[in-house]
Image (tube, rainbow, N blue to C red):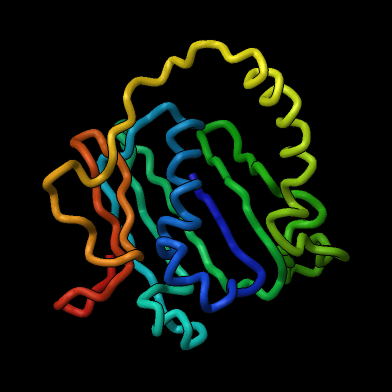
Length: 200
C-alpha cells in the first residue's frame, strides 16, 4: 500500500510554526485512511524527513519532505510520503497492490504525474492546483448529509474526550510535535532533530 500527499508549493512561512509539522499537518490524514481502508492497526513505524527545501523549513524546525514505512498488524507494509514542494501540482492518492490486482484511488486525468515512457499517458493539461479545487465537489456532496445529521441532533456515540498529553505528563517539546494513538497507547511524532542528528 502506498499513500502520496504532495502540495504544489510551500505554505506561507508564518504558517509553519502553527502547522504542527509535516507529519501532523499532512501525513496524519494518510495514517487515518490506511487504518480505515485496511481495518488494521499500525504496529511499527519508521519515519524520516528532509529539510533540504527552502530555508523557511529549517528556520521553523520542520521538514519539507517526509516518508514513513508502516507495518500493519497482519504484516502488510505501507509507505506514506509527503512533500510541500511538488511543482507539478497537488497530488493526493493511494495505491493498493494485492495478489490479484493493483488499484489506485485519487488517480485521474488531472493528477500531476508524467510518464517518461514513449507510449505512456501524456502529462496532465491542467493539474490540480490545490486542496480546495481537488476536494471541493466531494466536500459539497458531504455537507448535505452532515448538515441533516447535525440538524436532527441525534445522540452521539462518542465517549469522553481525552486530551493529549494526559494531565501531569510533559507536553511535546515544540509546536512541531504531534501525537497519534497506537495499539500500545499514544506515540509521539516529532519533526525536530535529535541529539544523534536523526529525525523522527
